[in-house]
Length: 486
Image (cartoon, rainbow, N blue to C red; front, side):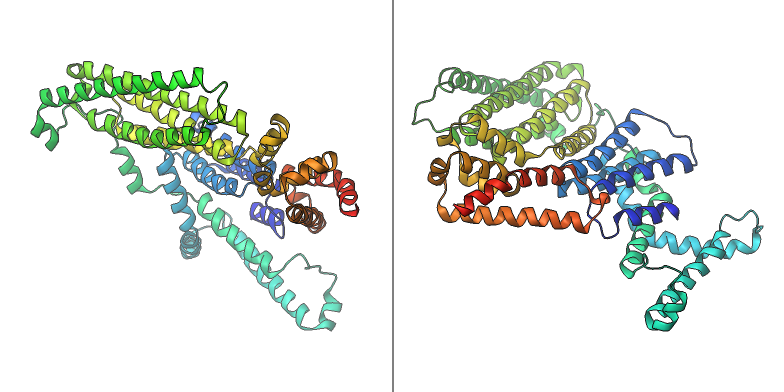
């Protein structure tokens, strides 16, 4: 009850910020103290705890809205591991969401059943004797507040009982958190999910056959797979040779007709499709007997082909890097690098799967957790600030896309206003007068909005991002006044 009341007070009429991090710390301490079983500090447990605090800190650091979603996922993942329900990310989320939605049902049924059992319990030993005092107290406080609101004289006589901190929105938030935390605190592992997960095998059954095995036969299937992987390896080797020649000879000093965008995006589009097909094809071939010594030749060629695909990821990353050097950062180019990282993870895990003869389920289990980790770490980055700073400091003015930077809005205002003050003629050539006027209006609105937010909230809503942004917006305010007055 005290935990729920504390968390409610941290978040009531506040924004997400430092309160999330403090609530997470209180939540972890509470569960460590009240846990009915010995906590096993395994690698999975430590990783889940790290992901939980990583996403909580990301909210404070950057204020990304997506970080709150990743935070909820991390919370359910941690709870599932803490109660030893599942260490597999997809099943852990299923356990977590299931217990959240069972919160209402559990709260009702537990209270009813425990009141029914009260006759057989000793009053001293019953842990629910507190309800005898809590429930009447809450009802009395509720009616007292209603009577104070209904009659001014009654309020004058009872105003020494200060209930101003209680409001209907406060009580609604308290009830929602009670249901949410009650479902988590009374975690119940889903037996059906546990049985389903237990049936998932770690290693492939080499004796298992299917219709395709019976139709083709092992020898025919081996020859087809061997021919296929050899041909694909030769094609990919040729592709890489051509790609490397372009990277070495043309990218360092491209001529004016060189089409960076077409050159890069065509490669990425092909890479997306090829990586998906690679993983599907490899899993199809190595689904059974091909994992035995009889399929060793096929496995070696397949592993070499996977290595070549990883090299294709590397060459595409080099092209994207060169694109950034010449034309600056954008969200699309950052997204390409993130995708390439995920593709490399998928290929490496597929290589391990084939090497060890693991099942597709093991591949799914590993990739989902590592992909989620990448998304969580991504929440720690302020990409807008990175894009604006890089483009304005690393590129010549004629290569900077000022229209794109203006889209960055909040992070772009301080740097663009400073640039305008230092290079007014160059800045006016980059954007029209109307566009600069709109930017100045948006800058002043954002500055006032952050100032008002600071006045209407407390330290509980503090985020490093908004504090740093407001400081930089305030720093260029004298420049803004000089510009609009000129």
